[in-house]
Structures are given as C-alpha cells and as structure tokens.
Image (tube, rainbow, N blue to C red; front, side, top):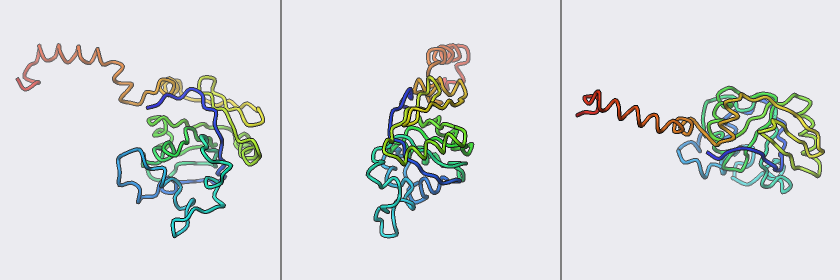
Length: 203
C-alpha cells in the first residue's frame, strides 16, 4: 500500500448525497480480484450513456478536472454494499482522497486498508470546496501529518482522524503490513513452538 503524507492535486466536485458502492463501481465490474483496470468502471452509469459514450456534462468527463486526485462529495458517501472494489476503483482512477461530511462505516474502513484517505469536514467547509472547485483554480492540498485541507483560495480546514489509522496511512501499512512489522517476533515464536511442540508441525 502506498503511503499517504501530503497530496497536492486537482479537486473534482460531485455534489450528490448517498452515493452507494454500486454507483461507485457497478456489479458487472466485480468479476476481477485485480485492483488495476477498475478505473474503467468508476461511476460508470454516471459517466457513460447506454451506448458506452462519455456524457460530456458529467464532471469527471470535463477537461478541467482531468487527472483529479481529490473528490469532494455529498453526505453518506460509500453507502450500500461492502464491496472493496469501490476504493480500488477510485484509487485506480487516480483519486487518493475523498472529502465529505460523512461516510458509510464499511466504506470508510475499507479506505484505510487500501491507501485512500477519507476526510470528514463540516458542511460549510465541504460546500466552500465545491464552490471553489467550480472556479478556475482547482488545486487543493490534503496534509495528513498536519490534518488539514487547504482550499484553492488558501482557506485551511482541519479534520480529525484516529491516531493509529493516521500512523498506518503515513507509513503505507495495511493490516498485513502492520502484522509483518512483528515478523521477527513471530518467527521466534514459531521456532520455539516447533521445538517444544513438534507434533503441531506434523513431525
């Protein structure tokens, strides 16, 4: 998992509430367990028409927001099913942080396991980011170490995050990576157990 420290990137506004995981990545794209290639399906029904042609009025299809790295969106983002493909698709598209007033719990947890930073801000702060994102300057800074979001105009908003999750994100540690930090202790324990209880090793 890639570490997240500070991200300076274009912000794209998606002012819709209750976007569920089926809207983020529709079910027909869930056949793979490969995390790459899922960008094609991100917001597919919003981005494309029935013939698979890009909808020019959808924000992610507009040239001004090409290569955006931050998504600012409405309440309760990521509700619905628990599909982990949702954060995978966002990351594969190039989104490394999503800003909202609230997230569905399972999606929120999945974000931290995959290197996608979910940021909760106040409603008026989210609205200001959306308003500024519609203007000419689209670049924001998301600083995990300082726990701040700096808007295109320079306004600074602070956010809260669980300290342990912060440490893992800063160091690029998912659940497996966190466990492997204790690899030497685990190896020592397994060696001692093999000597004292060899029958457990099939000997």
